[in-house]
Amino acid sequence: MAPTSKPSQASRAPGSCRRAARLSNRHFAPQRPKSNIAALHSTNSFLDEAKAIEGQIVITRRRIHARPELAFKEHRTAALVAEELRRLGIRVETGVGGTGVVGILEGDPQGSVVALRADMDALPLREQTGSEFASKKVGVMHACGHDSHVAMLLGAARILANHRTNLKGTVKFLFQPAEEAAEEGGGARLMIEAGVLEKPKVDYIFGLHIFSNFPSRTFALRPGPIMAASGTFRIRIIGRGGHGSAPHQTIDPVFVAAQLITALQGIRSRMVDPIEPAVVSVCSVHSGTRNNIIPDDAVLEGTMRTVNEATKRRVASLIRGISNSVCRTFGARCEVELRDAYPVTVNNPAVEKEAFRILSTIPGTETIEVPPLLVAEDFSFFLRKVPGTYYFLGTRNESKGCVSPNHSSRFKVDEDVMKYGADSLALLAFEFSGRNAR
Image 1 (cartoon, rainbow, N blue to C red):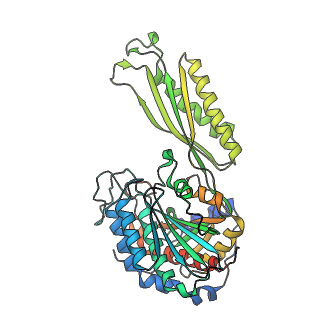
Image 2 (image 1 turned 90 degrees about the vertical axis):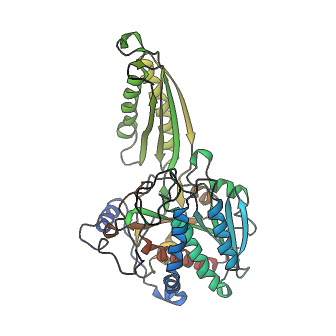
């Protein structure tokens, strides 16, 4: 379907997700009034330029979507990015932190250095959207919008390259590998170790994520913690196997696993402050080989999410303690492995306030403040080093069938929103590069 600039009926209908988002925000956090500074946007007219290249942005996204690549294997995507940046006359570095690409657009050296980041990796998922540009790689899919992130950032690069003579600072375009590879530490940390925040030193950083929870054309952000810290756990329950007809002669690890799964839910419901965001989810259960054999062991794997470091430590301690207690009660024992993945993603309040103001000037969009979300992101590593803001762009549009959540095999992006994403990135870079942070 061709992109259109007409607002979707889904986003305006009574009782739609837009109305629900407003109600949710009023409950959890105060709404902030929009700033009326259209002069900022009309002066730069970046949205008109984004509309002019909208077709290119969409084509780029579809090319990447059809040829998705998993973490640290984004070779084709990286080559596409590097080629486009070079065509725009932007200095390019490749192989950064693995398959990462960095573009540097130099303006006034006395201004600030602003970094814009897009992640490139796909997910190990079989696509079921039925789209004409669906993944051609069986079992690999861009189900989280990273294809859109790359396309939008390249769109922002095109806009900013047209304004290089007026650019009051320097812009770094960070195309990052392996955001989804939490168990391997993620690509952000590797890019930081490779020096992407230095030479020149980055003063501000921004990241944008497509998100199906919010209606199309809605920018969503908040000061302070916006996304959770994530961690993983693996619990091996060691029992004693035997025949399924004589469970009394065994220590059944499957039975113990069932009790433990239930007990772990007590952490969220009874052991953590009810108003403190936290999640403990058992997402993988493996045991046994046959229907009449009680196995010797069972393995549970899952994730924990919090937005508070003290709560994170408490949840981890409770997982270990409850696992040992439940297993001991039924005569089993266990091995518990706990691993940190990504820290809390924390927006700098001062930067977020100004970013909120700037995003609020984009015609045809809405900017809202939201409560913290329990998804996690390795952009958190960047924000630990540099003040900045991470924000979302809603893509939910019922009239176009864009209703499935991120990480779903049926996830679709309302491509109409991408010009607004490109515009927002270009605006933030242009405005913040004009601040002399040195």
